[in-house]
Image 1 (tube, helix red, strand yellow):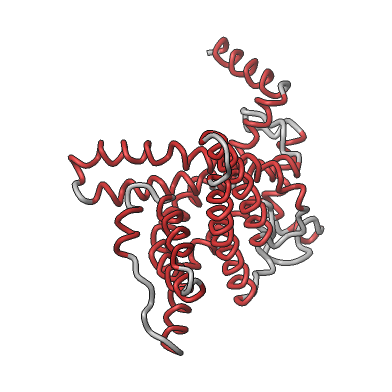
Image 2: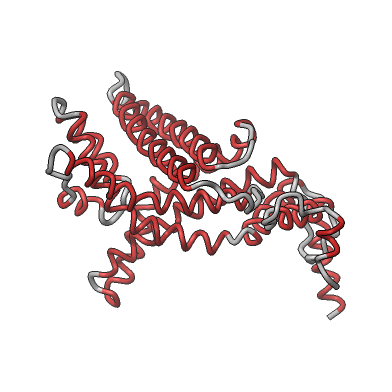
Length: 322
């Protein structure tokens, strides 16, 4: 037993003294402490529920804005649905826009947007928890809704810009592989910009843009990789589950896809937090023996405060009890 504990201690000491491993361990520990798995499940559920009303809004808005440019409208929609593995083709054929006009159309769009805001509001909760934003004061209703709408606008704008830029890059003169290379670089750049702005819009804290860059770059590349290999992976998941779940296997595959996107987004944000707040190196023993441990514990206490000025005050310390 003592020999096994010695090996664990040696491994812990080794990872703390190596920059790459120490940072990775700190990110994974902080992800667990910030309830990353729980929020990943919430984002998967709300993302699945929000997907259909948001697609209806997209089809309706593009139908209005690009009424005289059906080719561009169809190209954007094809690109959006191509990002959804397994169900993309079926959704493209079945999703229709709101056909009413006037106030009925406005009310229908507002209801659909309201239904789709759930995933953005859950992402806002998760990101602010990661950055240690105190739970008091609670954000106003209007502020929460505006941030959620802004986040959805960032994602929608990123998809449109990425689609347009990739199409232009693919049409460049030269060998086919050159167009694909430029298209891939453009897609990664758009993903990076979209993630960074997405994080900044949802955060209720004074975070510098430069502090969001490392996670934005990592997440942007990871999202591009998921787009390349994710469809194949999800397809295998569906094929393996089809014998048991039948038709529900397709829905199961879509949930797996959304879950992967949610976890990549949250892990990329955690990279920003660990780097900016210097939450590393961390000890695997859970004894708060390193400066990174102590800083992480202090932030965990701060973000649970409900009453302003309570933390650190003598009265607050006395109210902690024995």
